Image (cartoon, rainbow, N blue to C red; front, side, top):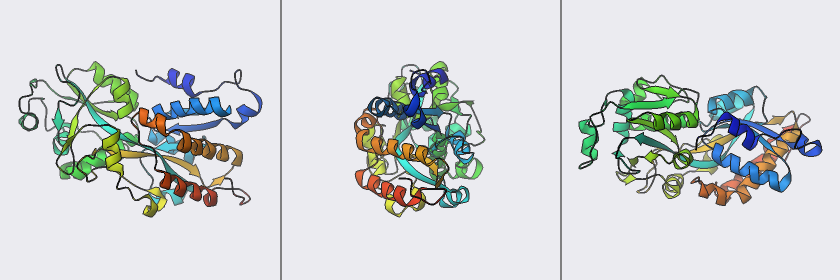
Amino acid sequence: MTFTPRMIAVSLGLTAALFAGAAQALDITGAGATFPYPIYAKWSEAYKTKTGVGLNYQSIGSGGGIKQIKAKTVDFGASDKPLTPEELAKDGLFQFPAIVGGVVPTVNIEGIKPGQLKLSGAVLADIYLGKIKKWNDAAIVALNPGLALPAKDIIAVSRSDGSGTTFIFTNYLSKVSPEWKSTVGNDASVKWPAGISSKGNEGVASSVKQQANSIGYIEYAYVIQNKMTYVAMKNKDGNFVEPDDKSFAAAAAGADWKNAPGFYEILTDEPGKGSWPLTGASFILMHKVQDKPESGKAVLNFFDWAYKNGSKTALELDYIPIPDSVQKLIESEWKTTFKDAAGKEVY
């Protein structure tokens, strides 16, 4: 199933006609990454039932989320591209990880089943560089002996919007391909050398489903929801692995959140025999000084609830919950970080 803006509004938006008075006053707003949208939708539905407090989340991409939180038009921004400690300090922001998941190459090739096609990072980079143009290229065939691959042109689908999913994808390609690193680079938005582009994880999923012989990259929940054909990837240890909660957890196992300034941690190309190489965290961005302290507290209450009550739902959607020890570390930071204009603690 592809999420549309209308569906997002229906799933997450609350109307004055349905929720009035005190509950409406506590509703929180957020915008940003499409990567975590499926889990935020589930969490918000359960949280609304439990507390009466609603979440209006705009799934517009990490770039949009960063812009909106900087402009203070939402209570929180969401980004799969972590901001550096210097970037956070410049805008008076604080970030913390909400969830971990995987970015997954997905293809539409007749006769190819999920997990059948194997790719390495170097070959994936060459496809998106436009150097490998057909599915029966010798480099792909060498990784897939015995697999019938068509002599068809490859259509590489990328993101057109500023995207944390793109940040994770290009960060990985920059680690495994010197040419990619020097010519395209790593960011939430890059100049794509080849292919076509679509907006959001939803748009890329839709384009791959519609375009025969295409390849795209999307968050794993979208792969499952859209019944798409994922690729097995060769990881840092040289093993071919498939995307799932176990391979994402294996990649996240080495994260050193305690010693990561500003919780700046990138999880691509991590070692480990079962590690998924395109793993990443999704982050929440908030202003340290809260102009609307009640709204700030409401956001923190929501994510506190999600940490403590949302793990089962996260795993059902193949996201990896933030470990308990890291949750405690994050919440201790909340208590000393967030203040109102008078310097009073918000949480």
